[in-house]
Length: 260
Image (cartoon, rainbow, N blue to C red; front, side):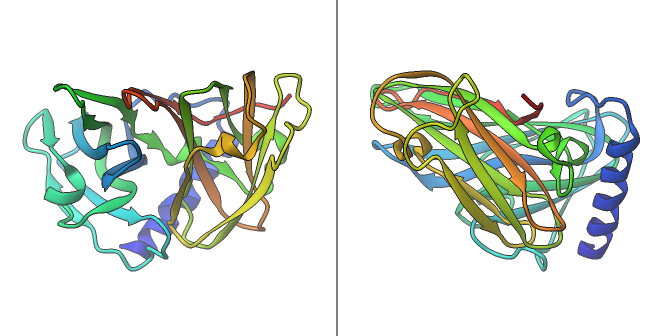
């Protein structure tokens, strides 16, 4: 199935290159939920991910958990029958994959599907805090050789009391090297250690926690975080979560392609 995954990925990227546009909210056959977890976090948080699958003609879906920090080429898929309009999988990392930790979920269905997830942590005084993370088609990835216009970027304000966690997902069957750069709102490089390289194994993922700690302390609006594949092959998705250190309330942002 991993060999078929590679063929599917190449086909989808070729379609993306020749198509005038794509819509993330349309049903699609193959994609990624960029971040899922069953793991302890900072400031007393413990994050778990619930997953909803809405089928739009599909009857079966293959799910792979691509764990952080490893080559996931040989991972085995979990097959889920889509016998209801919506299939709900609570705490998907533990209940479906029987493990813990963090990573991404890669999916291939036999028809169009839409996936969405909620990653959440209990609140100190009851209730919960969390964020919605939608599944993204592989056609929305940023790929090698696409130049500056093909880089993936997010925007964020630097504020005391918040932490910005930045994720990069390798959607390729090959290792990739990724250049991550942080810019001020005017497009100039941000101060501090604002440029670094990330190396990912095949189908690997990483999250750089509190990425803005690489910059001097302070308050900066409209920072741009840009990531591009610098190796000869491969494709990535990126995302950012902005988390309140006091409550663990969070927001999610998917990386987008645009050049300044």
